[in-house]
Image (cartoon, rainbow, N blue to C red; front, side, top):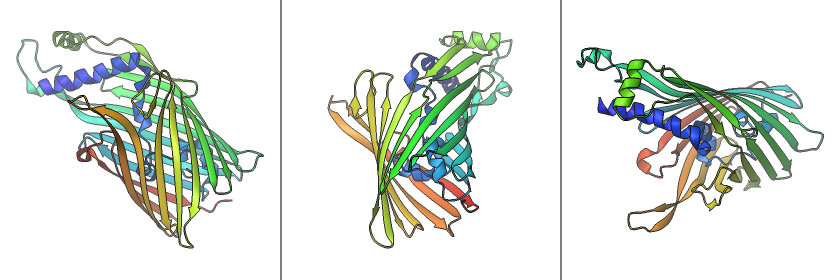
Length: 357
């Protein structure tokens, strides 16, 4: 019972903190999609050119190698407690434009609800225990178009966000991303303004009087309707194709996440701007077999002896493409703990449909 009350309390506490500290709002949208991208430490904004461009940089949709693509991904974190899923569909509209729809869910299911554990007589009744989910959803609607400048593409996302904590609380949010990519010879450059107008989540709560009494009795503050704001961030990237031999090719990319919401624990930090660099590399054999690696999440940590050390998160992955139609990708990664015990196996699938016009 105590464990269940702690989980419920932490969920409400997280919402309350997010309402005040904008830098940690909608963090489920900062994890990333696609095992290829995760294996490369999310270094994608300049080189991405498939259905996952809807998330990483919508400007990349016009560079798809087929007229239609479908993408799927499933990942589990914290020993399977949290589940993260992605599905996307992209299509070429004409020779100069493309459209995509992406759906993302991050959730914890089957959380025991013990707020009603005691009946009106004060007796414990385990039949009154129910279960609920705490889940975040996002739908991205993306559009990309080539410009009259050779190699320059533009793109934009409209984001619709829905977050739910059982029947206790829910929030609706809306946001906008704007992206650009530019390719010249073997170089690619990209930029993404995420939440460019700020993303707003409006939270509403609906607890019964009995549930309110339990929260008060356990020392928790009652949640109030609030507005949560996600401030803009800028992601800059540069990538280069390197031909190793007739059979081997490689892509290397360096990205920098620039945030404007106060000092963060990143490699370059100041107030209000912090910069978080991450680097990824991919080597392929005849565009059939792919080997990937990346480094990101570079931070300073202080141990019990007050000694400061610099840590980073390594990622690795593999990919295989079958008959230029089906791509299966794998990544071994985590979401920032830097502990091998919490690393997760991520799989994603991409299907290419039709020939590009």
